[in-house]
Image 1 (cartoon, rainbow, N blue to C red):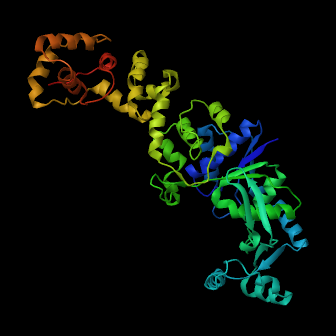
Image 2: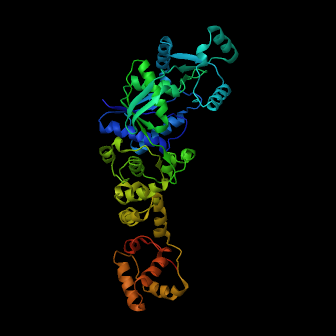
Image 3: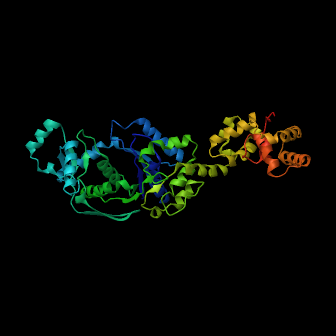
Amino acid sequence: MTTTRFAPSPTGYIHVGNLRTALMNYLIARKAGGTFILRIDDTDPERSKEEYVDAIKQDLEWLGLHWDRVERQSTRLDRYADAADRLRDMGRFYEAFESPTELDLKRKKQLNMGKPPVYDRAALQLSEDEKSALRAERGAGVWRFKLDHERIEWADGILGDISIDAASVSDPVLIRGDGQVLYTLASVVDDTEMGVTDVVRGSDHVTNTATQIQIMSALGQDHPRFAHHSLLTGPQGEALSKRLGTLALRDLREQGVQPMALLSQMARLGSSDPVDLRNEMAELIDGFDITRFGAAPTKFDEQDLFPLTAHYLQRLPLADVKDTVSTLGVPDEIAEAFWLMARDNISTLGDLDRWWSLCRDGAEPLIDDEDRDFIAQALAMLPDGPFDGDTWSNWTSAVKDATGRKGKKLFMPLRKALTGQERGPEMAALMPLLQTLPKV
């Protein structure tokens, strides 16, 4: 069975970069009728917070990305300890004691000599007495996995055939000096023991994937299918990483972005298919193909989400937004007419308040000096309410006959006088909803 996972660390809120990873793994699982696991990677006890776990779940539920089960790494520490013991027993795990400053000096020296800045494995030359002395002086060391210096190869679902020389990569640290198990080891154990068949993640993980493949092999396990999607940039190609904190899903939700608008964009962004709005998750699932994505950095502009949101809202019946409309105070008897009038003139549901304020309270008239006499004459001809769908047509026809004005010189001044705006809904639909008229 196809099994995928989304494995966020609960150290902050999910942003658009995280969502891309979550969505791709979700769509792969659902298209294959498989399992989608939400795995909380919470091995860092200092930075992991329960409030972020709750927020992650809320954001995924808002988007409709429903998981089949939840796993937490903090409950699986014994499994990681067992894997570490097995690696020690086979001579693939060793303790190292260099400080960050010492490692930095080593890297600089290697670069100056024209060599790759990889760990020199000096710790392997330490005697047991030397290790004991270092522990007494510095405390416990870190534990590194000893890579086999050979080429690591796999067929990547997006990048194609990958081949990395393990000699060009430092032996990865899997356990810190304070005993904290790091992502690389925990993911290896979880992915293999949970039967994960497909892993999609960012292209910044390619080297990490290479080391994990060797660790899996050392533990006697096959590796899943890997695919590494491109990283997001800003609309001008600028690095997006510094802005991801402002692109949290909860912030986009607060701005009125609709889930299907966001999902429609993320399901196609960076692929050879155009971004187009889908109304239902089933359409995204059916149309998803990981092989259609490219490796080039992908431009993301959050402003593109608002036209998609507007198009999505324009297709909705009143029933889907009735709670929002009712919250505004729109009477039930005109709710349908109000929504049909307003939905083509909003970017988000938050814009409805502006149109209901216009209907309920009227607007400050916008009248050019040369139109003042004309507007006064026209408003004097306005019939008593209540207005209906024919009021605008009948009134403007009468004003045209009385004043000789026509076309834009007729309609625009009247619109501006009634709404205080040059653009907006069809006046025939708006006038029956106007509960207060301007006073000129």
